[in-house]
Structures are given as structure tokens and as C-alpha cells.
Image 1 (cartoon, rainbow over the protein chains, first blue to last red):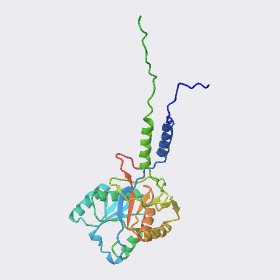
Image 2 (image 1 turned 90 degrees about the vertical axis):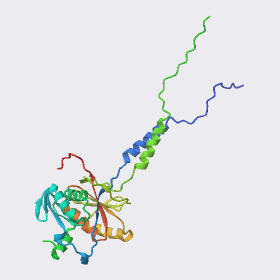
Image 3 (image 1 turned 135 degrees about the vertical axis):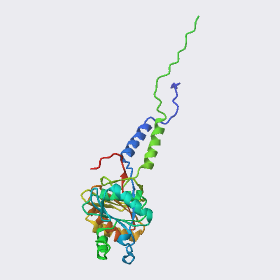
Image 4 (image 1 turned 45 degrees about the vertical axis):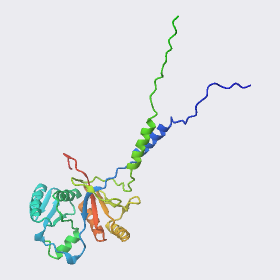
Length: 145
Length: 145
């Protein structure tokens, strides 16, 4: 006759390794997580219609970036801080005054972003960043020198 | 006769029952915040004070410091392109399918503007309306090279 044991084990789900599995998953997600940044400056291209080219040079502010910290605004050499004051005075008279940013090909990209950022801070509504071919077309039409 | 005192001893244990709960909470956090970006080109973004959410699910054009162009439509992993002409053809195909599709320029801060100009020209001439320039938050007292 077999003798029954007095000690009875209560039924339970083993959860000891659950924390291990969970932390393993955490490490995986932490290592693979990429916090993407899609923040920056927005820009809208003008409508590509040559017949609607109505921006006259004297009506706009022309910022020419010739090098790092080298700016010519409406034919006057200026610093970035001076550009702020100059554009502010022009835009306060006419909030819709177009501001054109022309960057020379060998200038680092961040200089253009600095100027564009400054214009955004000044809440300039009408910023234009023409490409080299657009500027060439404007030259042919006599709007640019 | 004095009865022998019964001594109850509790074994010292570290309570680990809630560890799995904490771990799973962290897992859920990482699962929700993780986003797998198809664009992983390593560039140093220019800084700007104004930073707005550029767009969701954009096509990303990365421009390296050397001026190489890497493109992703936002769904596949990024591929290097031969130049702005190839980008223009791809942009045209995308715009024909999704006219409101936005493009994001993720250029290295020290890239020559010539490379950025080529990309802008390719996008503008192929019907892209809006773009974004990715930037990073401006760090105060940073030393710009």
C-alpha cells in the first residue's frame, strides 16, 4: 500500500523568468530605438510661371551670401546682426516685402540656414531661395545684375 | 513551568513580484516610441532657433558633407543617387502619384551650397511644392567651426 505524502504543492505558474524575458526585450528596444527628428524650417517653392514674375529688384530685399559671415544686402556689406535690423525696418513698412536669399555655390550650407532662420524669427512672410538657374533667368530678364 | 517561546523567523527576501510589471511597462513605452527610420545617413545638421514639425512620412534627401545624395521615399531604405538628375526623375514619379508629397532635405551643415542648390533645382522643376530643411536645436554657447 502506497503511502500518500502529506505535503501537497499548490498549483502555480512559474514567473521567475518573466522579468528576465521582459528586460531582454527592453534592452532590444532600447538599442534599436531611433528617435527620429523631422523638425526644421519649412519652405514653399514659388509657382513656376514666368509670366507671373512680378518681383522688381527695388521692391525686394536681396541678401547675397558670399562666404562665412560675409553678406551683401542690397549692395551693402553687413553682418548677420545688422541684417536683422535692416530687414526688420524694411518689413515693418511692408510686411509682404519679398526677401531673396542668394547663396554662392562654395558657401557652407549652414550659413544659408542661419540667414533663413533669422528671417523666420523676424516673421518675414515672403522668403525666396532661388536656385542658380532661376537667378540666371532673372538676370536675362534684367532683374538681377 | 515556563513554556518555551515560539520564535517566528521570516527569511530575508527581495520582493521581485512587481519587477515584471515595471519591465513590461517600459517595454510598452519603447514599443510605442520606437520608430524605424529608413534614412540613416550620418550627417551633422545645421542649427536653428525656429524648429517646426516639417511633415509626417516625407521623402528624405540626405546630402553628405562631400555632396553625395542619398534618397528614400520614406518606405524603403535609402539608396545613394548618381546626382540631382536622378533625383529629379524619382521626384517626378512620386509627385505624379502623390501630388502633395513633401520632401525633406537632410543636409550636412558643412556641405557646399552647390549640392543643396542642385537638389532644390531638381525638386522645383519636377513639381515639388513644399520642402523642409531638417535642423537641430541650437545649442547655446556652442563653438561653430
